[in-house]
Amino acid sequence: RISSADAFEPKHAMIVQNKDEFWIPLNLETIPTPKEFKDAIESLSPEQQDFCKAWRAMQLESTLFAVAVIQIKPLLERVLNLPPESLSKEIKLTQDLTELFIKYQIPADLLTAGTIEAEPEGFEVVGPAAAADKVTEVKGHVAAMYELIE
Image 1 (cartoon, helix red, strand yellow):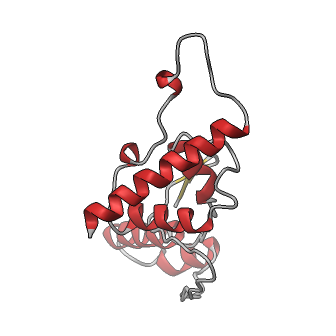
Image 2 (tube, one colour):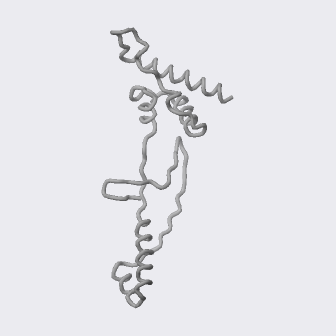
Image 3 (cartoon, one colour):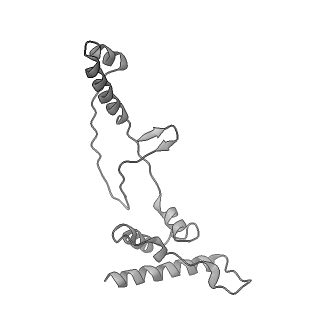
């Protein structure tokens, strides 16, 4: 539902991954124009007109269909404290993370890569080594969760 010019309130959602396909049946019923509607209800009682106006408002509210596509991988990287693009070559890890989040409802903080607090004071790991270490840490958390589940 689009509640204003800059707000989108989804009523339903689905996660489509890999080569999933889905069909959405649409009811393509024509509703009368404002003039046709006004002409059709002018002979009704005020109570009936109020009912018809409320019914029309409900019809108009649901005449707009919107689809928002949200890429999950960049959001996974942010929530897991991973550098951008670090999951791009980690297909199996991404699938495992998605399954843990969706199927098992595992909280993200149990899988998140730790912060740099473990480094000695004054030192900070930067660059590809830091990214690889974080990905390795997340892989370890994922493996531990699967051991726990089995």
